[in-house]
Image (cartoon, rainbow, N blue to C red; front, side, top):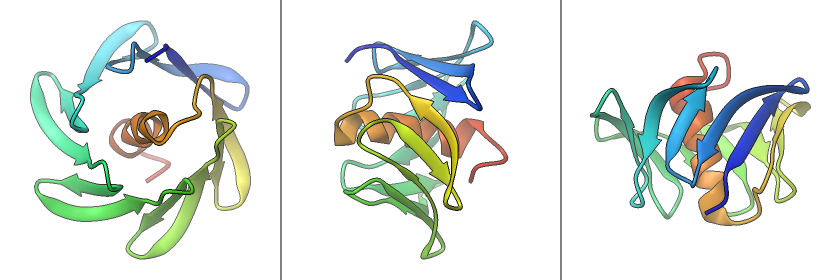
Length: 120
C-alpha cells in the first residue's frame, strides 16, 4: 500500500506509511495491522474490521460502510469518499492522498476514529 497523507484544512495532519505506521508531526503514534487492528504504544486500542465494523475494547462503536459513510450509533457523522475527500457533518474536513480502495478508507477511518478527538 502506498503512503497516504491525510490533510486537515489544507495542512498535513497525519501520514499512514506503507498502509501500516501512523505518523503525526513526524513521530510514530501507532500502527494499523493487516487485519484492521489499531495499535498505540504497542497495545491494541481497537479495530476496523474488513466488513466495516469499528470496535473499541471488543464492542462495536461505529461502522465504515462500503460507500465510505462513517456511522456512530447508527447516525452518519461523515464520509471518506473514493477520491480521498473527508467530510464531517456534510462539510469538507480534509483529504487523504492515495485513498481509492476500501482498505485505504479503513486505514483513514482508523486514524480518524482512534487518533482524532474531534472527528469521532
